[in-house]
Length: 99
Image 1 (cartoon, helix red, strand yellow):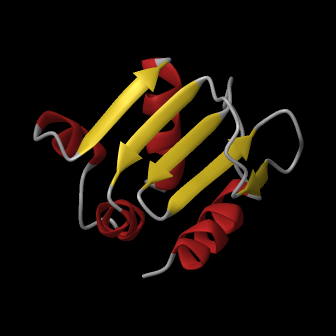
Image 2: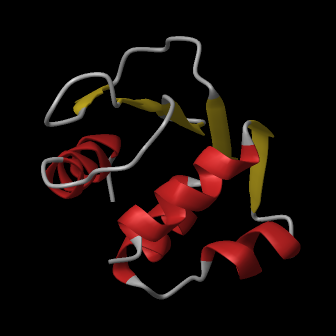
């Protein structure tokens, strides 16, 4: 799966999302996906900006999160997913993408 595909799927999810209190950056070897919740619907881009919460993982694992194959808490506990910054935002984005 490509970075573009992940970005498109996140943009679709973000188009109806609410309740995110800070920016999120998914960081991959292939690039980044940045979610800006100050706009409605949330703006999603591949801009490498500073974020309130950065989630680092492989693109394959990110796609598994979106499909429901991988639980975000399990991924974190097994070191497949690393969070820096506001963990409350990470928990909220996990709820949003898990719908």
